[in-house]
Image (cartoon, rainbow, N blue to C red; front, top):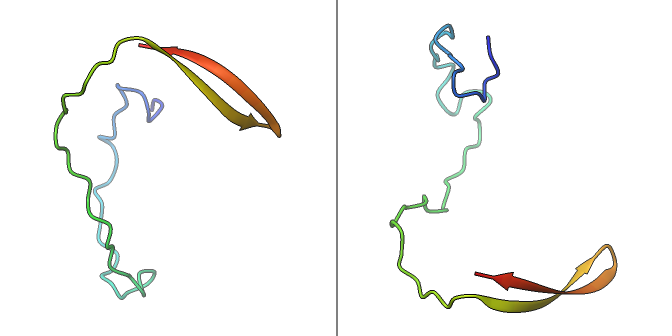
Amino acid sequence: MGVWMSPDYSDADWKAASEKGIPPAAPWYNLEKNDVPALVNHGLQFYQDYGSRLINSIYQDSSKVRAISLKCG
């Protein structure tokens, strides 16, 4: 059997999933409602391309403050 992350991995020999219990059976005693909405794919959005620019930034890394410049675009 190959590595499960490889594209040619086959799970054909696995047994089918089976239901073990319906809440409130163990271990699903106290399920709570998920109020977080599901992600929705709204497709790609058009954006303004501002071309290349230099971005200056300051950040803290291992207790040192560093200044960097990044060329974007």
